[in-house]
Amino acid sequence: MKRHFNKVAIATSLVILTACSSSSYVDEPLVKPQLPQSWHTDARSLKDNQSWVTPIATDQLLDFISIGLNTNQQLIQLALEVEVQKQQLNISDSSFWPELNLSANSARNGDSDNSSSSNNLSLNLSYELDIWGKLSDSAKAAKLNLLTAEANYQQARDALVADVVIAYYKVVTSAELVKLFERRTENAKLNFEIIESGYLQGLSAALDVYLTQNEFYTENANLQSQRSQHNQDIRTLERLLGGYPAGKLLIDEQLPLLPQGIKIGVPSELVKRKPQLQAAWYQLLAQDALVAFTQKQRYPALSLGADIGSSSSDIANLLSGDYTSWSVFAGITAPIFNAGRLESQTEQQKLKLKQQEQEYLSTLFGAFEVVENNLDLDASLQLQYRSTLKAQENALQAETLSFEQYQSGLVSYTTVLDAQTRAFVAQSSVISLKNQIIANRIGLHLALGGDLDASVTNASDTEEE
Image 1 (cartoon, one colour):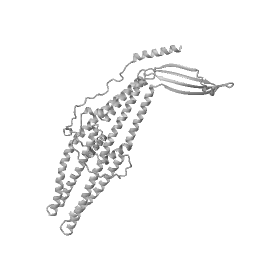
Image 2 (cartoon, helix red, strand yellow):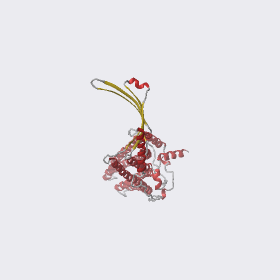
Image 3 (cartoon, rainbow, N blue to C red):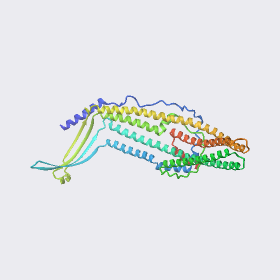
């Protein structure tokens, strides 16, 4: 009778398998957006792939990058998330294997007159057949989640290297601005001493003394503010390196001017090259697999099993090796009524899949937006720099000439102050623009899916050769 039941159960499951076979669990295919053949922003000046990384690859910066990749807390968290997903994949893969369990039970039964003891020791083997591919879908989702975690880690690694380089040259920028403020403060002090001496000799007006004195105090206050900003920039870099923000890093470098060249490729290459987009795509595929898994939860489950054991009223006899009790069985379970719970779970996962599709599209076009903006800004910054460089040259000459004319009595001291202000604005703008060019070029490289860590290392190796 038992053997007859097993045949009926297996035959029934095969009938259901034939009747319910389907490989489609979503209403529409996964998104495949049409991409342009080239970037819309005019980037002809950037098509020559010049070696722009070499000027920034200092030995100190390479050391900082290495430290950051090994000690940054956020990056370590993402590395651990990769390990978590690896263990989850092992958990999913274990479902394909039989499960073997050892169980031991001891009980005492009786009434007011008699009592008896029963002890059981059994070895149970169970195995679920993956007739619908449900276990495969679960394992597929776990594998895709692992790929997502790995892509997220790679994106974070690339971003950390970029952040370290940007923060490094932000420190260099603030240090150069500190030097500029120191020169301006020293010049303001010297001007005050000269004009005060002239006032005591009756050659300068009292108003000029007040103006120069006010200029000195203002520049000194600005100098202190810039020194504080420099310390903050150092602390930002120290935190990226995973260390305590003590503000003690010593960096003595100059801002390089990068050549106007970078390999930009085409939009379709970005989808395959940028880890952020790969992670978003893997996440979308994982959700699609989860839809299939949830759908198949509504199908019957067929399992096989076997057990062997021994029973005795004396615990010592359980280990005698007399395992005369055994059984082999097959079982099928199918959901009949659950008030629409399984159907709602399937629809819920389908809706989440549609959400994930929109999330992927948002991430995709957001990545394109960053590239287009950085391409546009790179060209603009180059033009701004060339114009500001000329403005700086003219402003410095005007500053020197105005003071000479003031000493000759040809102009008022307010003209001198105006010329000095213009000279300072031009000089500080040149410094800031050089830093913006570096930061934007790094941002563009990252937006294009470039591996800045490898680029910087390769550039350094080439330079040494």
